[in-house]
Length: 225
Image (cartoon, rainbow, N blue to C red; front, side):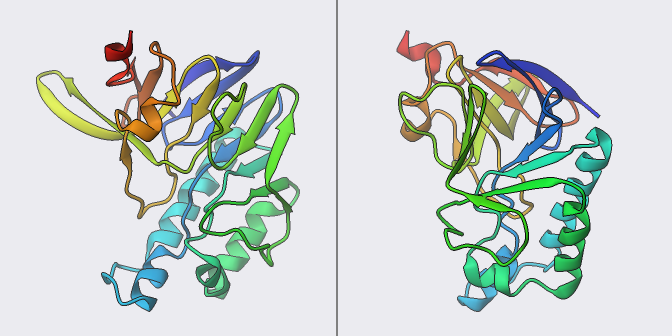
């Protein structure tokens, strides 16, 4: 599995190829924006009809990351479900799958803007979680230190070997880290967009997902020097 080591607020972290974040010392795996049930929510609201396989694909990747890391704790950084009704409409097979993944682990559900209501699934439900100098929350707060968040689904473009590519990405500077969306049916916000560029220092980095993880200067930030 492709991975890249990082340091934030003294914590040694690892960005994984899947978009998950691994904190080995704490035996903690962190994922953001699963958006489980998005195809159901779109169909319910009369939107595009997408193949209803995103829950299975997302949970398959999550199961693989848990197995690869042997995580003892898992933090879901909010928007784990596309809305409260989507959580309630998950098929029994998916609920049983989640229950198996939770077995024997601490599991933290951070509230997101899509799923703010308490969930019926087991685990600890919080607005945010602090462990040492690290704080986990759904949406980044300006001026925060040691913050790990999601919400924005960041993505970046770059030229690689003469080819222009666009990928989901982690964004990081010395103050904060924003995770890419982990869910299968999720869009994204370009990392040079104002809501993201305004959160980061000029020397921020983007870590693009793919067969290999590519760390590059965060597009647009060099213009702020």
